[in-house]
Image (cartoon, rainbow, N blue to C red):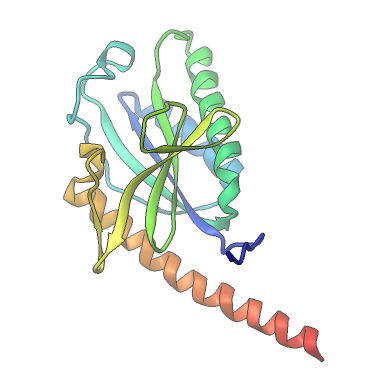
Length: 193
């Protein structure tokens, strides 16, 4: 029989952004900090030339960056965060008078010790529905000390710079979890007295 636990360890939030307009990225960054708390690390931007899929709505010469956040979150928060980031994309587009275009694409994800997930609204066979129109995409698995690709992993997540950044964030998360577990043990011990 399974031992179903209602409480799980918190996860590390990351947000992937690609953009053509630096000002749109800065607007997004400001709002993300208000919603998710301080940014812990930011990946140096790289050219997003992995696909031409987004050119019609975003233009060309796109850049990609990823933000990781200091504060850990509950795993189930991914649904609400995805709704926030989608609304933020629309808000930035509307404020610029370009509701038909996307000045910035904002994709939230979660780092667990074992995997990296992205939130999406698109249903594909390997994605799991997690509520309110949101699916969790298992993007990378952590095996043998590194992230490894899956058949459906997007090319930008396989770039050496992206993988190195995500592994660095995962290591910080691993150290944060040590503190979380220590605190949980202290709380459990004090409750026994």
